Length: 191
Ligand SMILES: [Cu+2]
Image (cartoon, rainbow, N blue to C red; front, top):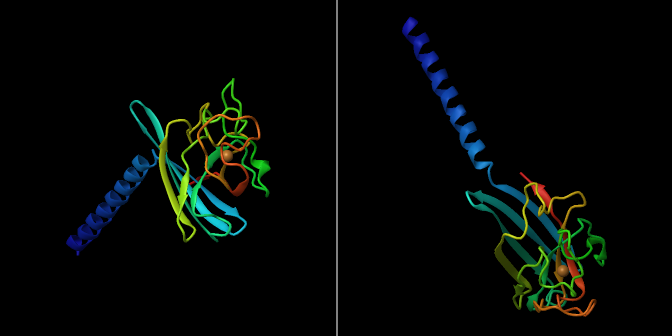
């Protein structure tokens, strides 16, 4: 009988050790910070995911944007994608403000200060079926607290543009960064 009690105690101790191990590894994995945006537009839907990782020399953010839509509304070819300065998506998405550029000399004008904003990233390519994925890494922004965080007081948004971002500087309202806005998603902290 006493031996059986000892066995039970041994099993309980073993279980406790296992759960402690799970807790430790979860804590270690929490170093990566994540955010997500649900992108919506007329005939367009998609997601953007953000994963920030740190190493000894700094941080980087991996961004993956997946889109699909009616090819009549999300035309096959290249479309400008940017991180915009305000986390509000009310069609036609002027609510998202200009391009994220938080510096003391920042200028969010989408065309006049392009492609120098912190929120400028490459185009997404859409197929004939109206589908596309963009995967990039940027060091221009962070998710964690700091001067470059997307998760600032007024939030940030991902905007999909009707046209290709030409990655050049143009006159204000010239549309060189992609012109009209056809999709928008508020960037929100994710578990
Ligand atoms: Cu833009």
